Length: 183
Image 1 (cartoon, helix red, strand yellow):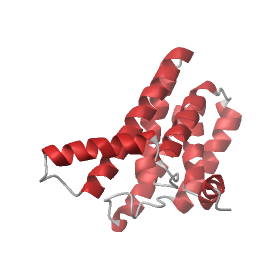
Image 2: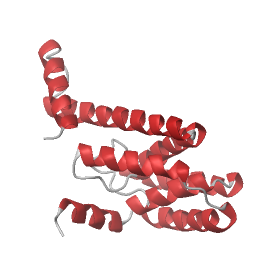
Image 3: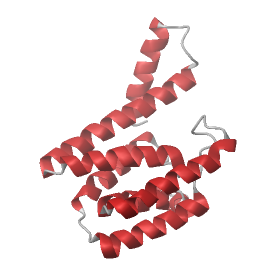
Image 4: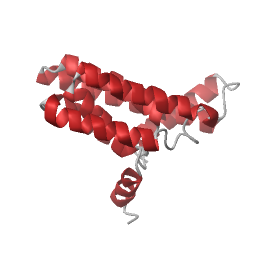
């Protein structure tokens, strides 16, 4: 058990002892783990952005990634710690990568849009309370967000969209399984 899971379990037990009418221990622990993961990742990413002088880009990356991830779903890592580390590494690196939008950004944006049109949303069933009848609306919203970048012309956003496009494909699931040692 990693430090995020241990800390989550301690907080969950504390809450249950002091508020026994709260939700089930499993649901509470899941929520606390998710919250801790988000807080730790965000603090590390924002700190790294401040150190590198990329605060504006870092906040843009975080904001857009959280929205597009919520809307489109995608593969999940095998532990809270691996998710936290991957989030920190990927989302801290994106603001440092400078690409010409009219070649790389446009290409990444177009590929991402095509992937989202075919695959989004993906893997929301056990991770979201959004009903499947609304998935087409989520696909449209995610696609419109990506389409807006053709006007904004941000290579940083193109990178965010391409990372998330990868996570909604089966290739991400295969890669995560490989990292876990299953393949």
